[in-house]
Length: 226
Image 1 (spheres, one colour):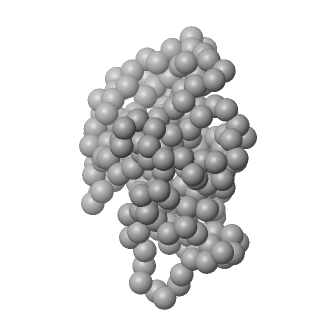
Image 2: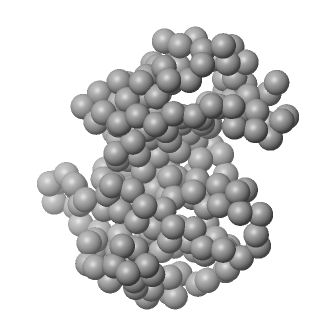
């Protein structure tokens, strides 16, 4: 068997799954609460719920997360006098500075738990464009993980729906995202409002984050669905 261990660390839950690529089959899965004071605990709890007979056969470990996304959306920014403006390059630099400690701590926690369970698969992180990057790339460019969790939902939608046109809605404890398989310009996405009642909404319409940050997000969304 060729097995992949998938771990998604969200704001509320941490999910783990072992997937057999040869059989195209989910072998087992688990969901446990994310423990923000010590990420290792929630990650360990999720892995402990999976049968340990599979551990030695895991060749790859694929990661996704909304930790950085939640941090930005909650506007938990350092009070260092820096402000986001209209310069995309400058904004990227500031955002990288703000969320680098979050991504670094998350990856350290993941690696610590994998060592604890003697899981030796190669580590990759899903980025905002739906491709995989290694640990060094994620630490050097943490903004690449901003849509990691939502994009994982999109890719799952492609796999599970077996349809060419569909809408994926990703709902969690901190925010909700909606992605269409139809190629839409970022300007149209940013103008979208309620999709399902008031549950799914665009962050620009609700004023949850400043426009410079939303422009940064919408550009990533456009890249992810194009």
